[in-house]
Length: 396
Image 1 (cartoon, rainbow, N blue to C red):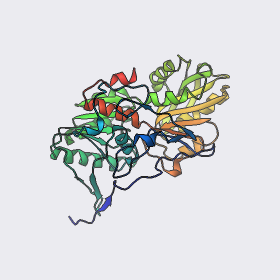
Image 2: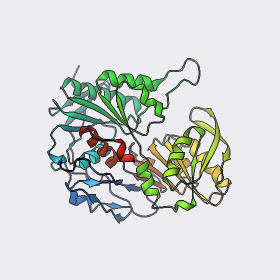
Image 3: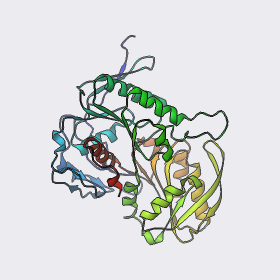
């Protein structure tokens, strides 16, 4: 095979990757950390200067000088993360910015890796540093282009396995194919199980996933799965924006009731409403009626992802009809397939709050959009997995 590959580099400095845009006419980006340059590890002094929506961020520091968030505390405070040479974090090409934030929180540089595409589209991966005996974490959401990113991750796992890594954890900020988790009609595939088998057979020892579409997807893996919930990030932001006494949490469909109920309990046990819908086809839905009262309330629609925004936009229109004074949309994964941007920016939403599990191009940004970072949450989970500490205590 001729070496006519196009290199994808990760070693260039990243200035202004997460600069905040002020004013009401620009999307808001709330980030956990400034991104270090190629030659230096995370400088905690720079974190204190990072603005959030035009305001400086106050960063809580631990005794080791690392930043903490969501009131999480390290179980082993005596360990200096910067000197742990058995932890490696590598990034694929899907979301390198998030991976850099994660490495920054851990006090590490991203691992050096060469990812190329040959002329015929084949993926080439070579680790540029030793991982023998190391705990390796590969950060790669299977976001669009889903199949490209998935195959890239599989090849990365195989490269780490052949390089004698002690353990390999596939970190999925967003797990594609999660919606294909059951058969709804005859002769359908269950692609979520197929993808789980591929990841296992490639050589992964563990999966770390953020807000899976359904809990049963964890059972499709024959390896350990750590399920990270993105709710704490959104809840922390929302509680500073809206009075909990004015809130009503709304599930955009019956399938999301458990998620919405959990969200409502953490918002001072806010009341719950449910939108009943009938799906006409893939990525198409029709809202039928509302269960619950939203009149004079601030309605918060909660879902795990927004794809074409048909469901959530129809639900928001119904809530407005029923007397809601404002509608917020909250989700972890901003897939934003066309025509999502037109629907979300139509004026029906007061604010659309998402996280950075999937990178958003400038074409997918609009004034009502707020992007929160889950880097601290994922990084804290990675650290606890590496140290064999409790992960569930982060969310208690």
